[in-house]
Amino acid sequence: MRHRSAVVVSIAVIGALSLSACGSRGEKNSGNGGDSASTTVVIGVDAPLTGDLSALGLGIRNSVDLAIKKANETNEVPGVKFEIKALDDTGKPAPGQQNATQLVGDSKVLGVVGPLNSSVAQSMQQIFDDKNLVEVSPANTGVALSQGEKWASGEKKRPFKSYFRTATTDAVQGPFAAQFLYNDAKKTKVFLIDDQKTYGAGLAGTFKGEFTKLGGTLVGEEHVNPDDRDFAAIATKVKSSGAEAVYYGGEYPAAGPLSLQLKEAGATIPLMGGDGIQSGDFIKLNPKSQGDYATAVGLPVESLDTAKKFIADYKTAGYKDAYETYGGYSYDSAWAVIQGVKAVKASGKPLTREAVRDAVQNVSFDGVTGKVSFDEFGDTTNKQLTVYTVKDGKWAVEKSGTFKG
Image (cartoon, rainbow, N blue to C red; front, side, top):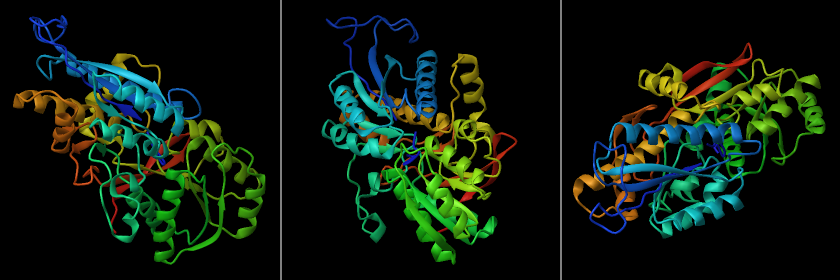
């Protein structure tokens, strides 16, 4: 996201050294295979833990927490004890920037999982990169974060060596949605709306490019603000436009009311969006959401054999919040940092932020969401996506596949 730009959704993993039992800062370790002392590595989480997007953010935090607990229980990295440090960005850039400063200021932080929103990531990347602090987002989909501002023209350049993500980008997600609406749902006339944020505008832009390329027609375009909840004027425009569907670039707090007001105004057509609306809260906000669509990065976690243990462990852990859209990707993001720490420890090199950052570039493992590895831009090598539709009050899988550009 944004990321869900989505959406989006952020978490940070951080580590620091405590000296061994013979040192002045040795820490007793109660859970690492009997070692008398351990290094404490903090995994920082940055995500919206309060506010409109908290359903996604809490799922991110809990999933990272679960990964840390499992790493400690199984002694995944001998001599290392992992801890979590979760900070709330409320889904906004300014708090995210403050959180980034706080995280780099903590010497025990060796990595970051998050954020949810691409716009928040923009405010954090430079701060992390200046201190070689690895950042792995489970939700960011804004393409420029990893491939530079000129990526659309074919000039791809990685801005920050410390930035990674387990979610695929809007360069894939937007066109995948366009292909579905045009080829599968047979919708040739679409009204395009976005919330002007990094995630929403970027997603709408890539959707527009592919949809018109296929032969589809945009019968109208509008921009809203993320905090808007009154869409009466837009609903009237959509109804009179002859649109067969609405594509919305943004997140569920606005998408839910927008879809509801469209249908109440007589525009009984589906609204489609990206992973930023694929939340149970979208349905709660919109009792008339039946038939609406959303794309999400990767394959549905519930259908993956690799995710069965994660789902069972999450339930057993007793978290009161659902793992939501980004739970599996958050667990894998945390595990990527854990594996980076493990590789550095195994090499015998000093456990520094720079060493962990470089090690994460080369991690490769079978995660909750499938094979986890990163390309030269720090992007996930997993390019699969899923289209969901609302059926009987729940998100149901409509189609899964790989975008064919």
